[in-house]
Length: 243
Length: 224
Length: 142
View 1 (cartoon, helix red, strand yellow):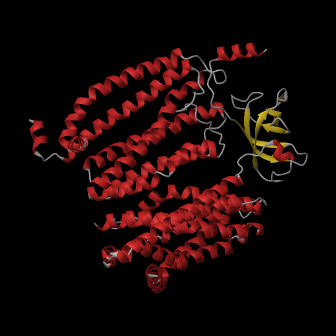
View 2 (cartoon, one colour):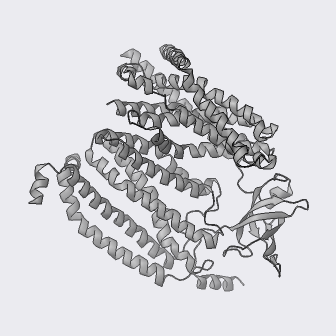
View 3 (cartoon, one colour):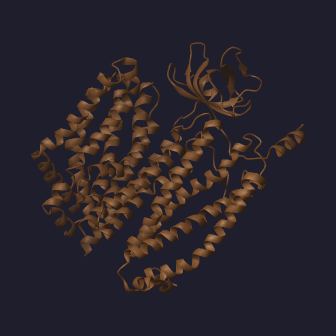
């Protein structure tokens, strides 16, 4: 297992492995996205309070979930990279940062679009919204730090430390709605126990969440492959690939 | 107690160094005084308005001054090679860092707190809130300094890094600001503030041991 | 070596005790219950700050919403099923504003203990249900 893991983290093997995985992941993403969109926008009935406006959860919830998941993923990858000195970890982190920032921004924008008609305000400074905004700043900070340090290895380590320190924000975002009784509602989906959403609305939502996760995986692998090629452009196997 | 002696020696040495370059310390203080006086002039000298914004203004400008005062931190040690010696020494680095930061706080941040108390009446902060302003700054500013030092350590050796430090550190300052300014505003309305101050205290006690570990790791990265 | 081990043990003990103190302070702070909303009962008990902005949270009282015919002015009661407060608001109410739904209002109390709101926000709960199911549930209840 350890040997297999070690082998996979070498650039060349990972490049080929990712290449073989990509079509499958891409197909899964498209299928799930198609079902989720059709189910969410057409099949699911309007909500008893919000009417059709509730349908924004099919974009908002997956985005918000991914914004936090990607950060945790980056922090774990960076920590693993820091401890075991794996170069691939840094490439994954580099490739994830802009994606995480985009999902965070999308979560904020879609939430704001929903908030205006429902709450009556585009933006309120409650704990959930503020901590999500801080998350966006954290992503931008990581990107800024990376681009400021010319030495790649040093940049990777510095970003890893920043990412690990920033992890404190993740539980704050998640539990803000319970600790501070915010305007933002609590979690609808529950890992344990029954969800507070009708099944006809739930299934497309789960499909959308899965679709977003697979989409992230696809784009992450594509970007990582690019990064590998860029960093190893002088190595023999890349040159052979070109010919 | 070896650790204690190490702490005291570093503290005295660092305090002496800061004292010798006292103009560096004075600049953030001047910045504080000048920026605070911009608010009555820029917004309006109306007591009602100033009274409402005073807690936030006093806190935000204190936070910015601390950000500006971070610049000399570790910079001299990095330039003359002392930092490398410290990293190589068998003494625990986090204790050394903690002593340096305490010296920095005593000599350059604590005067800032006094300055804030001096300027509070000019912004019509109610007298009832003065005690809370002092207590919240006393608990909050060390947290700001500890977090800021992580940012400073991460960007050591990068040219023109002062703006980058702010970008890295400001998101982490937001919770401290919310609690600090919030407690002062609450005190102005005559409500209990023990909850907010306890949160600030918890942050401080948590940052005291953990931030030096992160700073030490960041310094090692910077030196390689 | 022994010396360094001892030093390390002291440092770790210090870190652990600091974390323990922080946890204790946080627990204490949570008990203090930092108020983001004041409920009508708290206002009735005189806990809300007089002549200062604060947030009021509660349910819109049934059959209490009264629209002014000539302007956007609305008055309604906010209740927590024990006490209630009369709220006056001048502006457009959000879509989710219904009788029996949660609302949050920013504003201040006037001298007659009427809450003058600057902003009224509707708080949505985490339940999503098709409209048909809701009417079915209602019928089952009655």
